[in-house]
Image (cartoon, rainbow, N blue to C red):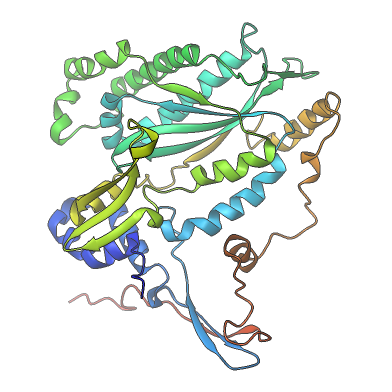
Amino acid sequence: MDRPTPTVADVFRRYGDTYRDHVGPSLSMAHRRVITAITQCRTAALGGHVEQCDRCGHTRIWYNSCRNRHCPTCQSLARAAWIDDRTADLLDTEYFHVVFTVPQAIAEIAAQNKAVVYGILFRATADTLRTIAADPRHLGAEIGFFAVLHTWGQTILHHPHLHCVVPGGGLSPDGTRWIACRPGFFLPVRVLSRLFRRLFLESLQEAFDDGQLRFAASLHTLADPQGFADHVQPARKTEWVVYAKPPFAGPRQVLDYVGRYTHRVAISNQRLINIDDGHVQFRYKDYRADAASMQQTMTLGAPEFMRRFLLHVLPAGFHRMRHYGLLGNRHRTHNLARCRQLLAGTTAAHPVAAIADHTVPPPDYRDRYEALTGVSLRTCPVCPDGHMIVTECLRRARPFPEFPDTS
């Protein structure tokens, strides 16, 4: 009999209490909430419902998901829902994937100032793309795009970077023309990199001057202006990594590909190999190796694995996916309609425009599950003709006593 595949939840259920005791009061409330959500996900603690077959009487219990955005178990259906919603935003044009990365010295500052530095990363990236695209020497158009924040590398260490998905063109300044980029080429990455570096460092310095940054432990010397300047100085001279991946094969491939980025967490359950003797073994890709030896395995002590995982818990209320330019939430519907109108005049066919049908209600989670797995949750798994009917709802356990003891 095959061994069950381990999950991140298994790690926290087995070693989470030990980790809490080891870290003690320094474990933040945000980290405690994530640990609790992941360990309770799809257990009786969150309640659920009982289903029974209307033919054979077979009974099964489904427990509720935690729906925490850091939980690997909850992301597949969330990703499917996001793809359904974003299908209406596709344009019949070439799409590009551009990645903006900050140096390690900046990543260290970001680890202790997540909300401030991640916000700077979004703003500097958006201003860079829109400024260079609006320059007549490059594209001369107003573009639209969305950006997704990732804060990890393959070994779950802190590595903040933005994935941006951009249509290959935009509206002319007067809004009367669609200006397409050159086939297979969006914007020069060297120009993007230089402007991105300047805008980011200017905003970071302003944040320091305004007292928005806090430093502790190994970075406590950065609280001094000279210490901060010395730490940041090397980043002013190095080339910051900005790269554009090859364009997508077509608009329909965009969401399938990017959906893997939008709802990815620090490590997926599929990458875990084994949990044993206080250690966690998982797969990772070493992009510096050749293709034959790129797939590697790493073993970490459970406390270190959990520490790395929790490095990527985002501040409460922080949006890790944002839309800019033509795709900004306020005028998105109007801008997309205008873009489609202009694109229709320059293309022989317009296959993407017919994708969205707002008269069709959004699919039920059981439909999404069947589309993802090929398994129907409505059909009885025992008899071929039965249908599973909800017969009872299970209330979630109370996290605290109704009347706390005040003695």
